Image (cartoon, rainbow, N blue to C red; front, side, top):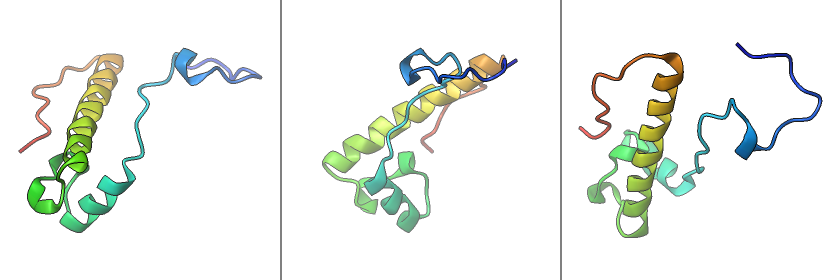
Length: 85
């Protein structure tokens, strides 16, 4: 349970309630909206080539780690963490 807010906010790196820091993935967001799929499902056919393909892999990893952290804190198990169809 969360306590009352402190008068000064902790640094993100020291915040016990911080689940994960995520990048903004701006260029991937536009591609994902056009392809009508999540950022971490983008393929080269959607325009994710070169650095964008690497960003897709990074996004997949970041969201998997976030899902794991949420499941651990909620004390629920993930049946299968498969973000790629």
